[in-house]
Image (cartoon, rainbow, N blue to C red; front, side):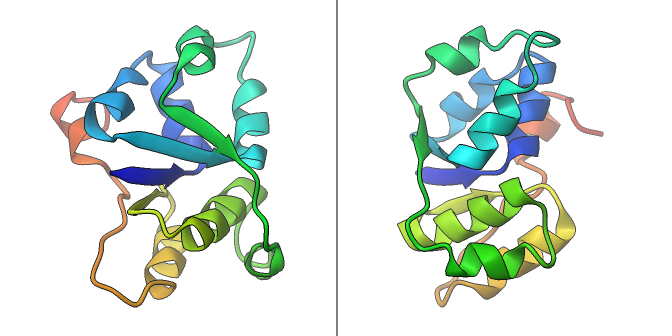
Length: 129
């Protein structure tokens, strides 16, 4: 399964040293360049070694910025770019943690699918209460 992630989902897992949970649950995680830049800002406060060495996280550039520009009126840059890339790449799932972002992501797809807002694997690890 290929997913597109916003900053918070990866950032929180880095902060609690549980980034491996994404690799265990998804084949590939794609993040837009804006999200990557936001994650890099977590250093030196948090250890980014696992993030920097991961083979399963790919940084991608958004080609069509029209949807991104529209979303900026409602969401932050990382979330806007993640949702726009999710639609552009036709990925399986978006990893979005904010309610408004999940509602927008759901509205962009024609098929039956779901948006991960509070991943079940995080609940199982008792990371998120």
